[in-house]
Length: 186
Image 1 (cartoon, rainbow, N blue to C red):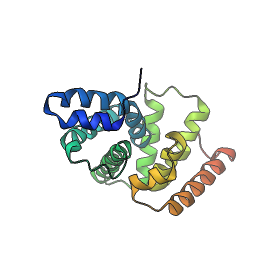
Image 2: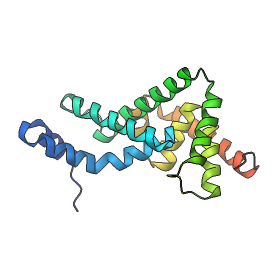
Image 3: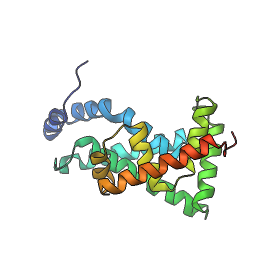
Image 4: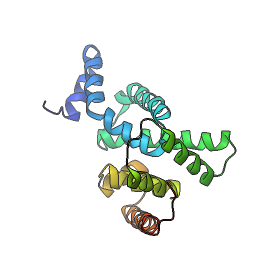
């Protein structure tokens, strides 16, 4: 199946009678990528599904205002990232829990999830990622799992490329140290 270009989706969305078709094409093209981006941040499948729905509702409501000064998928990633961070912050505030305890709770949810089917090494990697500060974790996930270029991550997070490279390097070193030193229990 031929991948539809963003420009085609935007042109179809601009016309009232083809708006639904355009949105369905957009969902087909980006839903899975956005699901996994959110899932790696919040780890819980049900929370991820809820956030995914909220993200695409925002995309639907605001797509006609999209200015094309960035790529469509980086714009959607920005919405997904912001929604995920807002969710995690609300979760932290609701429970009045420090971030490291929220990360511990996320790790426990990951182990208990019937949707997680990784092996022990994958679980160890995910737990190591959870030890990172929130921004480093987001940068690491976008670079390592989503294979985004630093310039794209910069657009999404509004951070300089140099700062992103430094954050990713520091995050990778921390994860490497944790995994090689067996600092995490499974």
